[in-house]
Image (cartoon, rainbow, N blue to C red):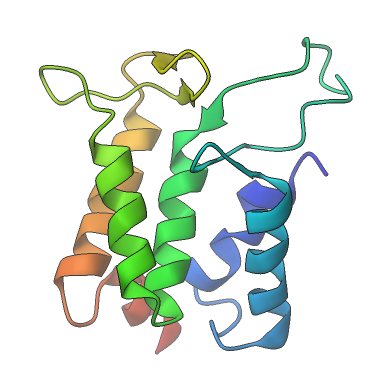
Length: 141
């Protein structure tokens, strides 16, 4: 399960499979069921401690943005916008994000600032604001 959310959410964003593919829809549903906690996507299931860390790692912000991108591609704009707004609401006073967010303690955790989170934020913003954002462009190549 360690690579489940990281790679699976990127499948449509990079144009490997179309967003309407039943496998993609099933993957998004499984991620919503198993990895979406407190409104944010975990990088992987952490309860088992398979990574050598204690259970309970924070939600991985890039994966949460990738879920919003998948929502856009699947025509679920309202859900994408709500998730995007929740994510951008986490930015600190100068607009920076960390790698992870802990919904229980309501604080940014992990590497800070994290460029990967900011690149994901920019891509999702473009996907939401342009009629055909970068993820849609890649779908049509």
